[in-house]
Length: 466
Image (cartoon, rainbow, N blue to C red; front, side, top):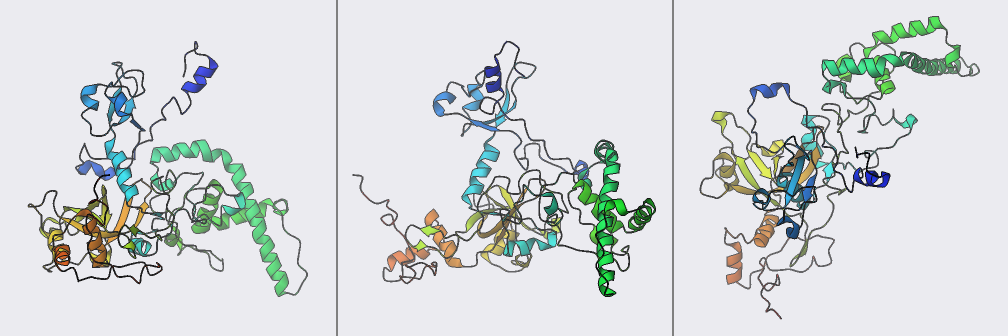
């Protein structure tokens, strides 16, 4: 808060976003099983919690980062990029506590270069491959729901991600008891009135169906005031025996985040009572996200766009991405699935491709099964990116698969200057040999045949400077 000597206009500017830094985002909750696991103290956390601050090079040499005191040159000038995060503006020693923010900032830039749209996460782990084959964007009209009417909350409760109430499965016993005392117990009368309205609608539908069956005139609608106390008590006893129905009423009244617990109470369903089952919510297993499901990483709605090559024109396939084998498969130590990193994230391969390479002496099989010591940085392979999702804890999951077409991998290798197989050198020696490059069938240039190699002149690198 500003001092009393500051004018109201100055106090308003100091508290605005232009002159103040936002509060840090709370860190992820701890895992109860983390006490028996080893975690690196220097590893990157799943998502950034502090704002990244940068400064131009002319101000960086003077230690000027826009704060009340300059930052030390000995630390800030050793960084490759001028990116810092302020952990504490004024400490007890009257110094600014800061550290480098290149980890999350560069990860964001690398992810944006992938041009990956964010998809809705799967409701179950077994559906991960199905979501990768048929992704659904988080910006679809039936998913990107932020402002809804009260009558729409029930119909779209398994699709929306924003709720007024908490996710009960993610609360501790102390948090749950505190939430009951503060937000639930005082609304008992309101909940009874809510149940009376529901019971009145059920009686209205029941009396109408009986009148139609008996060919009698339709009776008037039943209101909550028409229900006697004895009828309401009998209704309360009835729904207490049907746990599934009671949980739905409580969840809709408090607007709680969904829980995938409906199949557990199917045996306790009451006979001759209709139940409505919708598809499981994608946020029922791990809870809804704290921010928008895209997390601001990508605003692409679909993967249906065409990449244009400077020589070969519009391409039929998206460029494949070079990945690094961080930890190869080693069955004796229990590592049955290799760890593959793409743009700073650990990617997931489809289940049908995880068995490839077992007992097969191939380039990809050897790279995934053995540690490469002769190459700098380890073995590197090319993969096709399928989709990206963000779970409730803020972690990014990238689904990838083996390149479906070898030509797409060759085109990317040519752009990067990698010619380990000698394909392009052979094509340069034999100028008459041309090969068909995969093009977009909708392109007007798809009937042309282009050579399978480029050159400095073709890329505009061999021209003399004017």
